[in-house]
Image 1 (cartoon, rainbow over the protein chains, first blue to last red):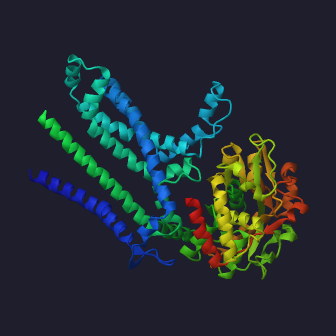
Image 2 (cartoon, rainbow over the protein chains, first blue to last red; image 1 turned 135 degrees about the vertical axis):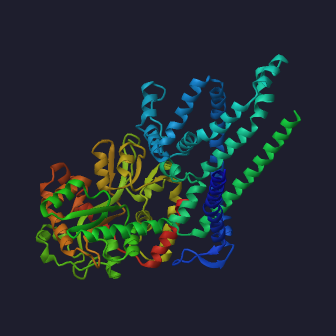
Length: 285
Length: 343
């Protein structure tokens, strides 16, 4: 008994300490630096300033923000329309196949995502597998120049982030009470009504969770546009990378990070509100 | 944090290398040294080579400044960084009487403008920056000058080296200035020129040039002639153009940084590189032109007589040797470069 409670205190302290140091403290440092100045010789000097945020409001950077959001939205959209039916069918299979397919979904994660991005390069190249296949089948007659475009960036991001959409949706589908669908059918609901009135509302938490887990990383995975994108495939993550590593401007890099965190906070808030309402509805039912 | 870890790592690493006495620590361009060459040197002299690589002069310079003297015995800066390092007293003067094979170097390359007082650097590789075009995609394209790259028909098609110095050189040349110009007003004008070019730029890259161009993921743009030769070896549609409005000639040198711990071994290593046989192997490895006359004679005829690698004197007359620019100009480059990349 005693041992058990010791262990619990230990692990709780560890978790809180870990989060406190590596999440909260790190974020506070970033937040602090984003209000400080810098000089050529010093990365950060203790002088309060708001210029870093003002600096972000120039047309050039606002354009990158806009582009980043639209790429992230496109990626999320494709992940959702691929991931939703995927998760549904996965949850419908019998146990044996389910775990096998789950394993196939997870296995690529054992390889570094960087290595997998290089594999995508090999597929999308002008002389790569995709063009070779389409040329052999006679579907196209000129190889497509896919690599180093935004299309390649979107393909890379969708591929890398799809499991983050599938897993929460799958968990959601698993918990779903099938009798509701049967009842709807008994009451004469067609296929469309069943999806629209039953399935979608009940899987809202899964959709929100999936969208969040895809939308934010797709703005920050800077190495994917670095590898697959061209001169203008810049995401917010690349902007942060650029400010920290090449421009030596940590304060501006921090300001961009803070804005990203604020966006994430806003989305978490919406998610929290949405699931609360959903749970209330369930209670009422 | 990463810096701290790197520093700790370097401290440990240099501590380890101190323990071993018979070594030479070489820091050169990543693609320039092959394992065969290093092994041949180790076999001949019994000296162990610790080789590490970089992909830009800026990287070499920053690292040398950050870790201080004594960590490296041989480095490989380009011409314009040689003059910068001489000015900041970062290079040892080289006693050429200790280099038996110094005589192999083409006298044209000795005592260059970037190293006027005495010898601080041994010129080794040289090359030019020009235009490449893939004839499969542009069969009838007439392109002879840098200014042609600004035409709107090339929107989102050009391949560019990820190197501020190279891009600004092009813009400065098209404006009629020298690529070694430090005039801030001229550099500003060059930046405005490059902003107009940026809509045409598909991609910036310096590290995977050969495969990107050879595999036709980029079909028109700027390139170093050595890389071009490697790519053209397996893609016959490629053509190299020496721009008529002038182009940059660069020279990569071997040098000994101030405070090198194994200076005798550094001399032995550089002398080994200057042997005709080694120079031949070095040139075959990266297809770049060598200053080593004796070594060039040993090369296979297709490389030795290549008009791309060793252009005629008439073409070379249009070339301009790359020299250092001052600190204010360098800061402008960095500032404008960042803005260009964000466009």
